[in-house]
Length: 290
Image: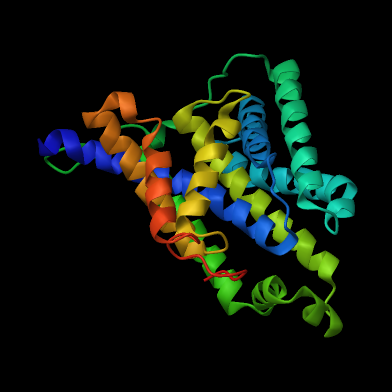
């Protein structure tokens, strides 16, 4: 029994970590600017394709793991400055429609450049194989992904809570006008905040490509579960996104093992239960990363 459950639990935790990563990026952008970024998954896919292109041109996987997210940040910031910034002070429905349109355009662009089907993208051989714990084999690639995602979450938390700029970001979520009156350039805060979201999406995109497969729809497939995770954890809560992601990942994985027919609806059932008990989510607070 343990030999069947343990791999499912482990795989669920990895899947949940991906969901949490994407959800944190969504929450960062939404809480400060009010933008519901439906193109977030497209940036995740872009990072995967950029990493694939770099590796196919002879670049090492390790270099691509760093460079692809950075290139994604550049593309994301350019789009944010040119298209999204003018909509920050307008009704959120405008930015929602814009980013939805961007996601559709991006998906077609990926099909034109890299083809409509998935492309082969795998991690280096050193990450192959697994580590035996007696009752199961832990794949080395999945362990590596878990370590990278955990390290990135810790670094993000340190940035938000231990740096002056991170404190300004959190304060701006509470009262943008007050922070602006104190001399802080709000547009710089918006840009850095959006760049953080893109960096998280980019890193998740490269890692997910080697694990889940790289195709034009890869990022968008992770987007809806990420929204569910953000709602379960509580919009604006970094810790809530992590907990929500792990809960959703475990729920999907265990349900797939025992009730495969229900694996696609279990996260919505979980969300409904949480919202009935706590309408703001498990750790949701009003406009603050808690």
